[in-house]
Image 1 (cartoon, rainbow, N blue to C red):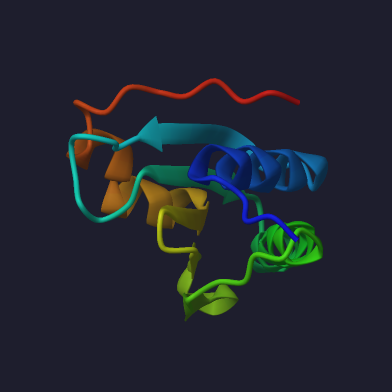
Image 2 (cartoon, one colour):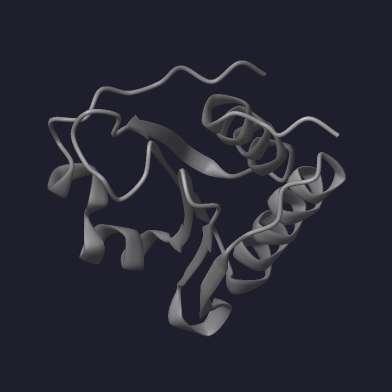
Length: 117
């Protein structure tokens, strides 16, 4: 099975998240800006149940294509879940937690990647 590119991973993850009604989804293109990852996918859910559902949908969609996270972090109760695929890091937040961490502001110089649905 061919390996997914970073762009394919983030697009697939974005479609899966949007399929579970993720809100305010943004993909930051960090290529050439940071060595952390090529892309950050950031989105929000309205409840701990929804953010958990979004993460599971993303994890499943990527697993079907042969991609597994290198690391995952957070709990629904903390208001933040993270899936680290190496070149793509996916953050799923509750709104208030997202505002607190303000990743979009922290990485404000990163261009946004449009998501193909």
